Image (cartoon, rainbow, N blue to C red; front, side):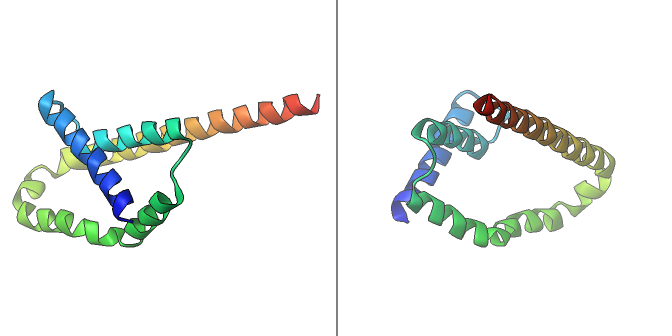
Length: 121
């Protein structure tokens, strides 16, 4: 578990270094997560230790929302002043995520169907 946590935190650190070093508008943890995804794709997926550690983190995911809840309370006045742009961006990003997910799923199921069809001929 320690090795898996170290791996996750290392990728987050690398993402932070890249984000700050190049002054990117993307958060470091997002860059680190993308790098971890690429590394896992090249490696053929996560090992069992990383799977178990990620599962444990996901079981306690609700604890990670405490800082966000604190931010909502702390910046309540600002949220009240800028509610409309926030609401619009929330809806646009939600529908965009749903659309991209649908397209990826359609592409993957089409490729899988084509692979199974070729095997029967």
